[in-house]
Image 1 (cartoon, rainbow, N blue to C red):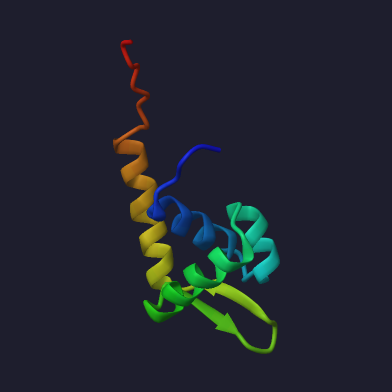
Image 2: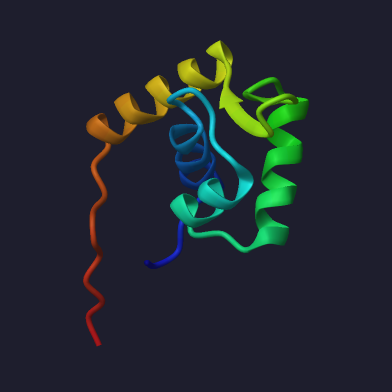
Length: 89
């Protein structure tokens, strides 16, 4: 999958939890993260109110602030498409 930026990983987590919430395991597989990586990211995202934990359902759900982040991230990706660099040896 190549190297991903933290912003890309955050966007994948928020996207996974977007539709009504999702469990840790499903987010982990969707974002291609280890369990320890996921715990760290979820902690930061909850602290910054980008994602919330739904106690009764044991799921994480993207907040309005998280949806705004996701929207801005997607718009930036459209404006700045990934370019590949060719190395001359």
